Image 1 (tube, rainbow, N blue to C red):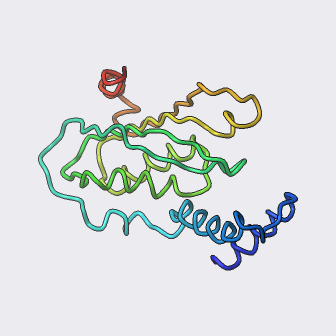
Image 2: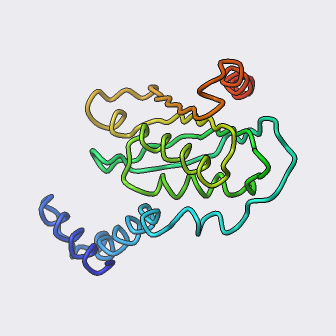
Amino acid sequence: MIDKLTENYRDIIVQLGENPDREGLLDTPQRAAKAMAFLTEGYNQSLEEIVNGAIFESEMDEMVVVEGIEFYSLCEHHLLPFIGTASIAYIPDGKVLGLSKFARIVDMFARRLQIQENLTRQIAHAISDITQCKGVGVVLEAKHMCMMMRGVQKQNSVMSTSMMLGSFRKSQATRSEFLTLIGQRKP
C-alpha cells in the first residue's frame, strides 16, 4: 500500500507543477504516504481488538464521564483535518470499560475519512454495544480546517455534535446532568 500511495503522491506533486526531484521534495511522496497510512489506520482496527477484553464487572450504576479526549480526523469531503475533543458519559449496567479504551475507541473511528456527525454516532454506538450500558452520551467539539483554510476562511468557528442513546435520550434529567458536568469545566 505504501508504495502505491508514494507513487500517487509523486503524481500529485507533478500535477501541482512542482519538481518531485528537487531536494526539499525528494522524500515527500513517501513521507506523505506513511502519514496518510497512519492517519487512516482506523480502517485496520476493530472494536474488539481495541477493547481487548477490558470490560470489568462493577456495581457502579451512576454516570461515568470522561472528557477532554483529544482527537483529529480527516474530513471526507476535502481530506483536510478537523481537530477537537470528545466528552463521553455512560451509565454502566454491571460492567465498566477500562478508562484508556474510551480514547482508543475515539481514535479508531477518528482515523478514518469522516464527517463529525458520523464520528459522534459511531463512538456512541460502539460504547453502547461493547458495554451493554443503560445509556451513552457523546459530545464532540471540533475546528475544521476545510472551513478555516479554504472556503469561508472562518478561524474561530467550532462545530459541536451530540449523540444520546438509552437513558440519555429518554431522560431529560440524565441528559442535563451530563451536559452540565461537561459545561462546568469550560473556561
